[in-house]
Length: 212
Ligand code: TMP
Image (cartoon, rainbow, N blue to C red; front, side, top):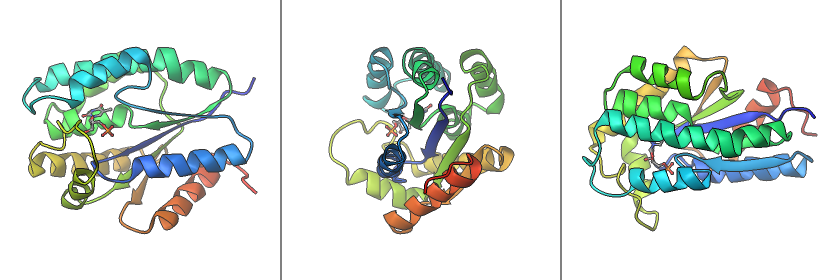
C-alpha cells in the first residue's frame, strides 16, 4: 500500500480555504485518487467536541496557553483517529488548518511566541508534517468582511481585534518564509478559478503528480 499525501490549507479568516479544498478534492478524485477532506479544530468525534469549546463563547474565555493546549489536544485525537489511518490506507488527506494555525493564531496572534508552540508540536505531531502547505494570504479587513457575511455562530475568533488578525497574518507570512520547501503562499484575492489553477500547479510540481 502506497502511503497517501498530506496537504494542509492555512490562512486567516475568510481566505477561501474551504472552497479551494473542495475543488482540489474533486480534481484529485476525478484523477482516480482516494481523498479524505478534514478540518481543524475537529475532524474526529472527540476533536469536534473540543472545537465547540474553542469557537464559541467570549473572546477572553481561555488564556493563550490553555487555548494552545486545547488545539493540540484536539489535533492529537484527529491525528490518531482520522489523519494517520487515512494516510496509511493510501488516501490523500486535505486538511483545513493544522499546526501552522496554532503557530499563527496562538504563537503570533496571542503572542505566546514560537518556542512553546514548537515544543508542543514536537510532542504532539512528532514528525508528521504535511508534504505541502498552501497558505492563502488575505488582508485581515477584507477576510473578516468575507467571513462576517457567512451564516451561523462560531465567531469567537472573528470577534478578536483587527490588530490580532494583522499579527497572525504576519505570522503566516513568516511561517512561509521559514519553511519554503513545505509551504507555498497563494494570494487569496483573485477569481476562484485562478486561485484553483495556482493550487493545482503547486500540487503538480511540488508533489510530482501527473494529472493529465
Ligand atoms: P475555521 O474558521 O477555519 O473552521 O477555524 C476555527 C477557528 O479556530 C479559526 O478562527 C482559527 C482558529 N484556530 C486557532 O486559533 N488555532 C488553531 O490551531 C486552529 C486549528 C484554529
